[in-house]
Image (cartoon, rainbow, N blue to C red; front, side):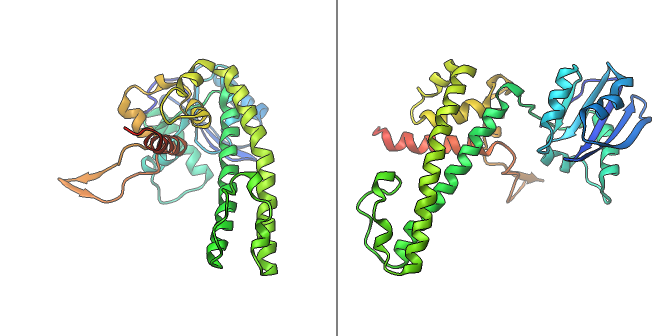
Length: 300
């Protein structure tokens, strides 16, 4: 867990939502200078913080609406800190909770140097990273359809398919193997959706690959030289890591990629559990897949 400890004259904490943002600004002495609810609008936000420029820092919890605020602060050279959502829950436990209370607490945590930092992904590659994550979502849905067809076959104890139906050319006549009209209709729907996903995912992959060659062609080439890492895994590693230098040690990187087993220990006793979900789930998946592919294709 990394904390932001740099000192500023003013601190701005925001409880951010899609349509409104509760904002609180304090000074070094802890005096509340501004505390009000605004529309989620760049102009309203700028009018509110402009009297405190240039020495004001802004922080917000890592929720899905932070992109525009990060880009706005970067444009006006305002220090921006993204608070790690899971760690902030551990730091800031309270009996009562609402937007007004939360927005007041955040700048005081900020001033005290106890805002746990999440990585502010740069704008240049961020949209392509999100597109790659969307591609993974579509692949998961496609896999669910394939699994449903296979499970339905087992459900009615039908013979195995002659070929791998993951490939489009091997699906002809699959629905005819199911005698019941309702089951047949269900399989037809699955096959239609599978064909639709196939048409969508292939251009996705080509588009992302072309962008990756513009963003960082050397690293993309080097990643594909790792045994077990192909085109898609290389893209995932490239966009999810972004800059390996942001990790000061190998241990920090392994922890971020969920490659370690966290322990809970107190007074010499080890308890079950641990924060297993803190870290990057996409890197966890990529390294797990690469390990399996390496073992499968490497006889030694």
